[in-house]
Length: 324
Ligand code: FAD
Image (cartoon, rainbow, N blue to C red; front, top):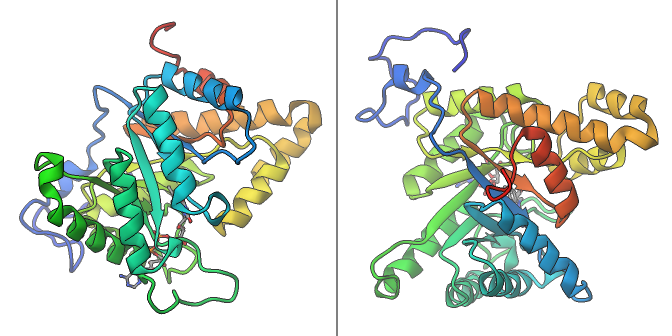
């Protein structure tokens, strides 16, 4: 992928944990632009007082792009998985878009998570993003009775799936996980992030969606290092619209990342009238760079804003298939 990448002989082992049988470092460096670029959206469960027509408009806009799936976040604010399950039922009833539920260990004890997984499967969910969730301020580990890591959640999902495999006609739940191109704030270094990703792959994760990142190079470097270490699952870049200086600061705060000064300066220089447009231009550039480098698709964080999503996709050159 990167012309400056160091050359290694095909026999060399790159990581103590890399699978030796299927690993071909030459192949891992080739940029393969897939025939179909994947497109997926992230939405949040609407607030209880949200206007029904606004939500319908959001779903109609997202559906017009014929996305591969929509993922629905979960948080304390939306009653953990209750809001997620309800929104998934709505999406399933009103669109043709497959859904994926974000499930975090922080949503409840092991026993409560079993209840949530069953509730989600009963709602028609056939894909889960297995996450740990964020620790509360001052917390250093998960409380007793809670699963400590996303890896434990992958195991739990699979054991429930094994018990109920006949319900799926012997099909499987898709399991996604999180990946961190700029590093997870609790990880000692990128090697740890990549080792954890490899472990998730080995446990059965089918794909990863990345945390937001501000520089294309961060994603590309991370993807290359992950491939060289033996990660084969798709690393779907999460793209977050950078629509204002305030949003940039909030994004930095939520992700624990430092927002590059050059981005703040560009938006400040644009002034209040055009910071939104400039921010979308910069986000589109970021997306175009990684797509051109062979990322193969992207996952857009919509914040339930159809207008911003459409304006961003327009700039990237993605239009709804019916009007394109
Ligand atoms: P883990 O994989 O458990 O990693 C957390 C830390 O522990 C890392 O430093 C890792 O290196 C280390 N680690 C991992 N496994 C092990 C192990 N087995 N042994 C020792 N150390 C280990 N949060 C929500 O609450 N709701 C959401 O809807 C949500 N959606 C998200 C969507 C995406 C695309 C992303 C990237 C994140 C999302 N998050 C969400 C945030 C996520 O929960 C946090 O980033 C959280 O801090 C870490 O989650 P994780 O699954 O990566 O945890």
